[in-house]
Amino acid sequence: MSDSSQTQHNHQGGHHHGAHDHSHAGHSHTPKVNDTNLRRIGFAAVLTGLFMVVEVIGGVLSGSLALLADAGHMMTDFAALAMAWGAFQIAKRPANARLSFGYDRVAILAAFVNGLTLFAIAIWIVWEALQRLMSPGEVLAGTMLWVAAAGLAVNALVFWILMGADQHNLNVRGAVLHVLGDLLGSVAAIAAAIIILLTGWVLADPILSVLVAVLILRSAWVLIRDSAHVLLQGAPENLDMRAIEADLLKEIPELRRLEHLHVWSVTPERPILTLNAFIHPDQKIEPIAKRIKTRLRDAFHIDHATIDVMRDPN
Image (cartoon, rainbow, N blue to C red; front, side, top):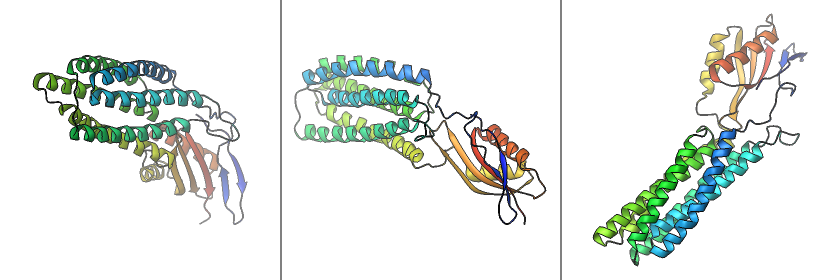
């Protein structure tokens, strides 16, 4: 993205401002949706949805909580992947007068909801496991083992598909975390089936299900934390406002001071910065504004910056 023209105007008290270069000529807010992300998310959703049905049937027939837990998690995976795919489709819409930054935040909302669904499914797994521990039931370990092994293969394929997408995208990260939870669920189901086949100890099924639930909770917390940080307009993790200020003052000696420096992001891939820069009254505004923007782009990869340069009379 590139910001466009700059103008100058006078304020009372002798301050001269360079109005920020934020007109929309030559500056598009139409999001760049990654077609690879869209294609891979869609394919992963189809695979996950189809095997979810298989795993539900296998869980009911075998009486395995681990399989049913994994099937329930796959159901949320399917919903999460479908939601992510839909969010990418919506994000392709261009910006308009009501949504000047476009629809990219839809993907962040989807990621936040995905994290909440992970929490919900983990709590359900723990509750069901407690019921099984108090009242164990029969488990057909042979059926459980075959279905879990097939689930592991499908989840590994989906995980490989998603790892080829953009891992900086929160929606993709959310989908990857969901599928990683499924992988762990399949491994737990296989381990439980083998233990039951060898020892007959049916409690291995709910115990390993709880272990998977704990791992899912950790993934859910990371996803909710990161997506909420974007929604609350927090500074991106890789951008330190103090470091940016120190760098600009060092690299551009004409700057006297900076004020109202704010850094946030529409999505993790689209950081935004605004600041007021004060310069010596004899300095020209437009060249310094351009140097600030160039430095922000080259040193911090910030393409969208709104810079207001003012002559400091003091």
